[in-house]
Length: 153
Image 1 (cartoon, rainbow, N blue to C red):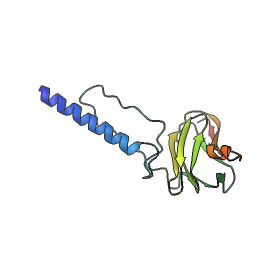
Image 2 (spheres, rainbow, N blue to C red; image 1 turned 30 degrees about the vertical axis):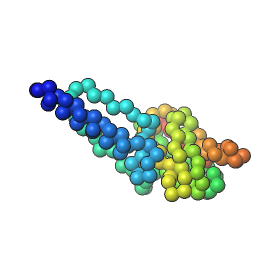
Image 3 (cartoon, one colour; image 1 turned 45 degrees about the vertical axis):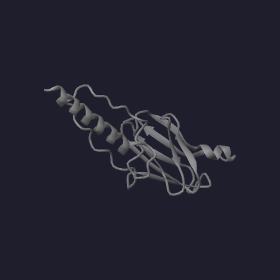
Image 4 (tube, rainbow, N blue to C red; image 1 turned 135 degrees about the vertical axis):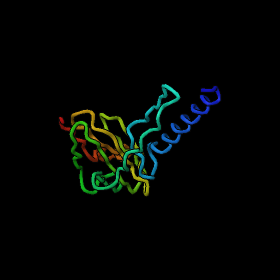
């Protein structure tokens, strides 16, 4: 392969990686967000294949919906049940700006009116993990909004 051909393949691979990052970046309101912490794409050769399609958005019947009003869960603290290895999808809607954090998995997302916090990841750690509103703490309220309960597979 010519030198120009190799550079062309490398440029194409960079474009594919950048496009994949833009599609899957956390915090977007287009429904494709919620991937676990930022992932790093590495290329080992110029013949790498394009990344697979992004996971479905974390809305729909398999997503757990949590609604917050003034930083408190409308339906009370809920348990989000999963088995180790299962996909976890959580959508948190809030009437005020908030930061939602899943302890143990160390995943945080911003929520705001009209912009839900979307979480999508695989349950890789067994146990019970608190899901908290960080702004509730600052407002002198109980931060706990839900618990992620991951059972052995």
